[in-house]
Structure formats: C-alpha cells, structure tokens
Length: 200
Image 1 (cartoon, helix red, strand yellow):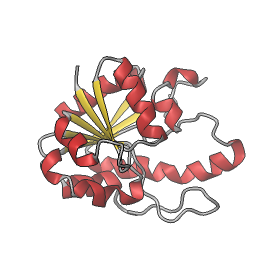
Image 2 (cartoon, helix red, strand yellow; image 1 turned 90 degrees about the vertical axis):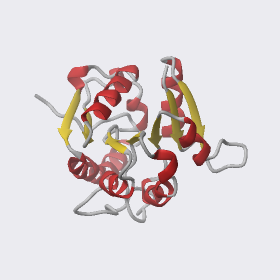
Image 3 (spheres, helix red, strand yellow; image 1 turned 30 degrees about the vertical axis):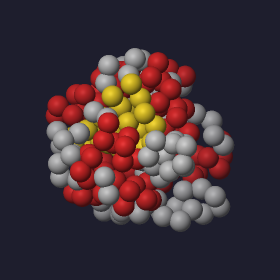
Image 4 (tube, helix red, strand yellow; image 1 turned 180 degrees about the vertical axis):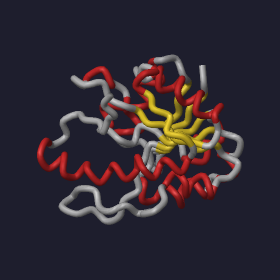
C-alpha cells in the first residue's frame, strides 16, 4: 500500500482516487474547499503526489508546496493552456517548454514524472474501454521514479506494452503539445473517450 495524495478534486482527481483506492492504496484528495483536506496537508502526508489541478495555475500552487514535496515523486497529469476559446482549451501556456519542466525547475528536490495527459480523463483509469489500445507516455529525469509510476499505471489498468517511456523531463513538451488537437476532437465528437496513441 502506498500513501497517495491527489491535488485536485475535480473529475480527473476523483476518477484517479477511486481506481487507486480500489487497488489498495491509501488515497487522500486535497482541494480548496473548506470541507476538503488542503493541498499542503495532502502533500505532506503522501509518499506520491499527483497533480490534478488546472494546469494554468499548477506552477504557482505547487511551488508553494516545495517543502512538502521535497524527496517525493510528483506525477503531473495536467496540461497548461492559456485562456479558453469557445469554452475549450486555449494555446499552450509554456511554448518551447512544458508545465512538467517548469515544475521540475521550481521543485529541484522533487522527482517529477509526466504521464496520462494525452487522453480524456475517463481513459486514465479504463484504457481497456477503447477499441484500439491507447498509449500512456512517460517523461522524467529519475529512472526509479518512472518505474514507480509505471507500477501505478499498472494498478490503473495499463499494460506494460501500452506505456512508452520517452526519456527525460524535456520530452514532456511533446506530449503537452498534443493537447492542441483536443479542442478539435471535442468539437466533432463531444466527450467521447479518446487518447492520442502510438500505432505500431
């Protein structure tokens, strides 16, 4: 059993919490509402922290938790975009870089691993529901941290052949850029489950 703290109580955070708890982990959700456990307490008590906060504000929020996140694995599943157009995602907030890289630079004592940011949130915990096996990309500087996160992905239903380790944290800019296709998919198909996957 691993103590997992999830920052964010929206659809992504609650979806991940439900599946990880069912897999036997001790999961705490941290939010901003008075009735929620706050982000600081959630990060402090966890072995692994998952960032499921809105990507456009994640950097400021998590930089404020530097002490609580030191020595821990931070799994970043968010995408950072600017102001939305037509109620959908806007342009990349960190062109030429990525939220994951910014987080790693701001949190040098934390092992940031980027994953699960190239799919609708429902696919994160149910990859088997898609007709074509999806891909979960992995980016991070620390090999041990990536192996640990690979194990968590397995608990979420991902098979090893579906996990693509792209390399260090700079490779996250590639997967974060994939978010630019999402508004067009949503306009055509609504919130039908999908993932941006690698076909071989």
